[in-house]
Image (tube, rainbow, N blue to C red):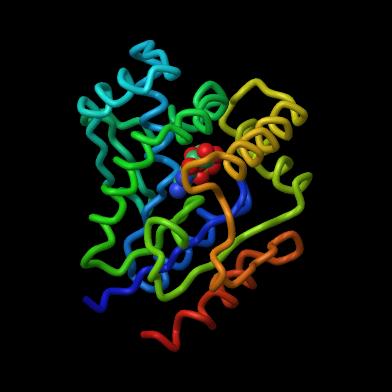
Length: 222
Ligand code: C5P
């Protein structure tokens, strides 16, 4: 198998998906947003009022969750049991619970399995928290993204406000801090930089600069 996997990990709202999408478009790779899978699982559990402190209930529920990706107008869409949920999974209610859900072993096991299947024979760019460490430890290219927490919160705040969400900058900042804390301290594959990952701090980099930097590392492999 000589398909290429580009793994992009990092903190919440660091611009991972913006870079991942730009790379995928440029290279004609498939882009997979692994965070959207954890978000869709969270949405399902919320809608069905599943008590997430009971791992057996969550395991049972996972059997009824079918996720799929499809592309439309250069955007990635995710479906949950054939329903398009791409917008709903970005709301604050999901954001507030997703880190707890993604810390559950049964959830991670199932998502990692599905992610590995998607990258088995195709050239992909996948972003998330454990892509370079757990999902694809042999990925040819690994990028670990960081950015100033204040800048991250401002960017995400703007996105949510543009979408009509009624929210304050403080709430967004607190949510990012909470998710980063949960994601880096959980037992199951916590967010951490893979030893062989390139660090990309995008606090002061434009999108074009980030893309150029990533491409420098990928083009020699093509
Ligand atoms: O990438 P995004 O911010 O949409 O991810 C939402 C949440 O999903 C993260 O805060 C994290 O808790 C979880 N996640 C994860 N592992 C991944 C991707 C996301 O645990 N590979």
